[in-house]
Amino acid sequence: MNSIQVESTLPLVPEISEIAVAQTTLSPASTPKPSPTVSKDAIRNSLRASTLDGVFAGVFSITTGGILLSNFLVELDASPIAFGVLSSIPMLVNFIQPLGAYLSERSTSRCNYSLLVYGPSRLVWLIQVIGIAAFSWGLINSQQLVLLTLLIVLLSHLFGGLGSASWLSWMATLVHRRLRGRYFGIRSSAASLTNLICVPLAGLAVSTWHGGTLQGYGIVLFVGMLFGLMSLICQYFKVDVNPQEENATAIRIGSKKAVSLETNNTIKPTPKANAWENILKDTNFLVFLLYFSLWMFAVNLSAPFFNLYMLDNLDLDVSWVTLYSSLQAGANMLMLILWGRLADKIGNRFILFLIGILVAIAPLFWLGIGHTSLDVWVWLPMLHIFLGGTCAAIDLCGNNMQLEVAPTKNQSIYFGMIAAFSGVSGALGTILGGFLVQNSFYGGLPGLFVISSMFRLVALLPLTFVQERRGESFIQTFQGLRLFSKKLA
Image 1 (cartoon, rainbow, N blue to C red):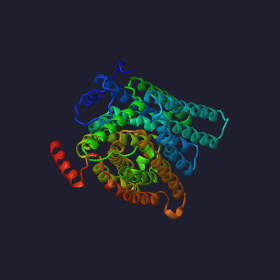
Image 2 (image 1 turned 120 degrees about the horizontal axis):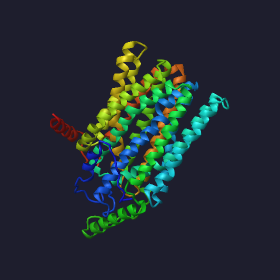
Image 3 (image 1 turned 90 degrees about the vertical axis):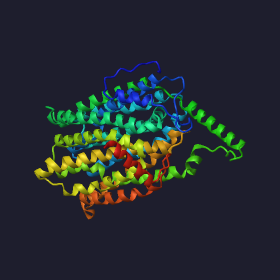
Image 4 (image 1 turned 135 degrees about the vertical axis):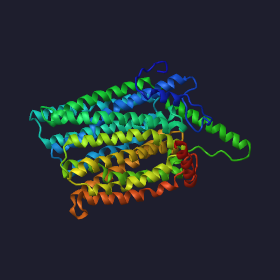
C-alpha cells in the first residue's frame, strides 16, 4: 500500500502536505507513529486519501440520515417516537464498539478490518431502495416501510459501530498529536463543503422528482450508497497499520522506561495489568467519560427534534430546511480550520467549555421562532449559521480530546468505551425526548428545548476536571488565547 500514489485535485492537499512533513521532538511513547520505513510521501498520500474518504462518506451520510431521512419519515406519517428511535439507534449501537475495538486489536490490518465492517454497512441500504420501490408498487404499506427503515438504520450502524474505534485509532497513528487540530479541521472542512453543495441539491432532487418525494428519495439514496462504496476504495491508499505490532511496540517502550527508572532507584516497575484494569485506574479518562456521556445525553435530548420542529410545527418545505442545513454546513466549514489552529495553540478543553456554554443555551433560541417572514428569512438562517460555527468547535475538540485522554496501548479499546457509554446515554436522551414531546405536561417541543439547555449546562461541570497532556490550567489557557488573538490581529 505504501507505494501507491493518490491523485487528487482537492484544494486542501497543499495544506495536508505541510502537516505530513512537520518535524517534532516528542518521544515515541507519547504519540504512535507508523513504521520508520514508511516515507513522508506515503503519509501525505494517506492524509489525502483520508480527506477524500471523508468527502465521499459525507455524501453517503447526507442521503442516509439528517434532514432527508427525517423528511422521508414525515412523508410516511411516522410518530414522534419513531423519530426518537431513529435518532437513538446510531448512538445506542455504539455499545457494540468495545467489541469492535477488541476484534480490531486482534486483527493484523486496520485497512482489511475497516473494509470488512464498513462494506456491509454501506450495502445494506440497497434493501431500503428495494423497500421504497415495493411501497411505490403497493406491495407494502407506510408503517411497514417505517419499520424497515428503522431496521436498516440499525443494521447499518451495527456494522459501522464495529469499525469506528479502529478507524479513530488508525488516524491517531497517522496524524501527529500537535497537528491533529489542523488536519482534522481541514478534513472536516472538506466534508462540510460537501454538505454545503450536496444537501440543497439532494433536497431539490427529492422535492421535484416527477414520481413524488418518496421515489425521489429512493433515487438519491441509491446514488449516496454508491458514494459510500467509493469512500471504501480510499482505504487502499492509506498506510496500513498492524494493531498487534503497534501494541507490541508500546509494551517494549514501557518496559524500557520501567527498567530505566528501576536502575535509577526512582520507581519500581508495576505488575502488568490488562486493558480493563488500566481503564478503571485512569481517573482522568473516567472523568472525561462522565463528561462526554452527560453531554451526549443533554444534546440529544432535543437535537433530533429541531428538524421535526421545522417540518411539522412550522410546516416548512424540505427545500427550505435543506437550505438552512447548507448554511449551517457553510459556517461549519469556515470555522473548522480556525478552531483547529486555535486548538493546537491553547488546547481543546478550554474551547469545549467556553463554546459549550453557547451551545448549551442554543435550544432557547428556538423558542422565539414562528411562522413570520422575518423568522423564515432572517432568524432561522442566523440560528443555523450560529449552530454551524459553534458545533464545529465542539465536534473537532471533542474528537481531539478523545485522542488526548487515551493512551497509545490498546487505544481503540478506550475509544470503544467512550463511544459505548456516550452512545447509550445519547440514545436514552433521544428516546426520553420523544416521550417528553408527546407529553403536554412538559410543554411539547418548547418545554423540551428548555430542559435540554439546563442539562447541557450541568454536563459541562466535569469538563473542568479533565486534564490534557499539555496540563495547562484555565488561567494559562486564557493567556495563550490572548497571545493567539494578538497574532491574528
